[in-house]
Length: 166
Image (cartoon, rainbow, N blue to C red; front, side):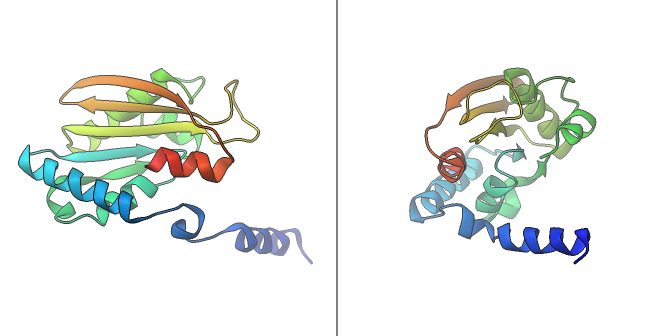
């Protein structure tokens, strides 16, 4: 068997639909419905920049009612190099306050949003950066003002991912 064929089998064995890897439930759908109502009520244009969550936040927001009116879209920047080049994250650690705030600001600007959420983190169990497994930075760009919050979630990578999305 060629190395290429072995890689394809490995990818197929580990790959799954997002709903199979991440718990999506009625509570999450309800939260997205509430976000939709608030977005319409307050004339919000929402965008996301995702790394750790690989587009799952955007997928859930896109399922909410009237999402075509208020959801601008998402940039999934999983690789560090994509964060640096597309979202202008400063070179260096990408699981950081600086990365999260720049990601939020840049996606808001790129997609014409007045509210943006960015997520970058390490689910574990091993990490690529000098951070505790389960470390997640949330960046917010709210009408031009940016902030970030660090949360450390407990559990295996699936638990960390599910908690981040919720």
